[in-house]
Image 1 (cartoon, rainbow, N blue to C red):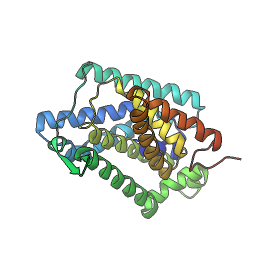
Image 2 (image 1 turned 90 degrees about the vertical axis):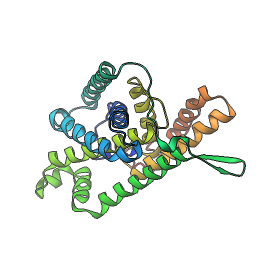
Image 3 (image 1 turned 30 degrees about the vertical axis):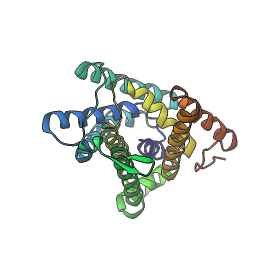
Image 4 (image 1 turned 120 degrees about the vertical axis):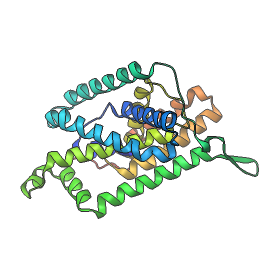
Amino acid sequence: MAVGLTLIFGVMRVVNFAHGDMMVWGMYLAWLLAARAGIDPYASFAVCATVLFALGWGVQRGLVQRIVDAPHEMQILLMLGVALILENLALLLFGPEPVRVRSALGALTWYLGPLYVDVARLVTFVVAVALTLALAAFLRRTDLGRTIRAAADNPYGARVVGIDVPRVYAVAFGIGAACVGAAGALTAPVLPFQPALGLSASVVSFNIVIIGGMGSLLGAFVGGLLVSVAESLGAVFLRPSLKELVSFSLLIVILLLRPAGLFGRRTP
């Protein structure tokens, strides 16, 4: 989820407040595929990513492209409007009650001495790492990936050499939405969800991205690990309801020490 958000910001400098609600739609797509077609979410995450890519492409081409050079407050208002539409549409179609996707892996547990490993969470983690590495390789090793990086570093220079920057922006936004669609499908068997989850998911993803450094894939990955460990330790040593206190305290400390985040680039 954080990798998709930091990609969108790193390429277009657009703050996507609808990111969490896009993740919720990835969750509901996985739920529909499991309930209607019997497809396990660990097999359908690619379908969810493809559908969310199309949604992200459409949102960028139809809405975001019109205000991509506008002040950030206009971008924020637009994406908040998109978030409200996605949340209320999900509420209209699926209702307010929490649901959870059933997976065959959900009942599997590996015991390692006194410890136990939740297989569903382990598979989610491994697939997320693999997708992050694949995205990093795509951005560095392919022509389209280099084009995306060029448009992110210098949009004007990219236009001069003939790159269709609006098309590149649409692809980047679509890839970011595909990442969060896959994240939704992979998380759906682990956590119950409902339409209102989008706001808290967006807050968590922004926390991770700011800690790691806006626009840094490595920062999003490391920030996700730090926030996860911090919240887990907070739930153990304090209480589960106070786990977010630990993660946001970590955010404040890192911003005081490194305002650009752990791997963010400082602007002169």
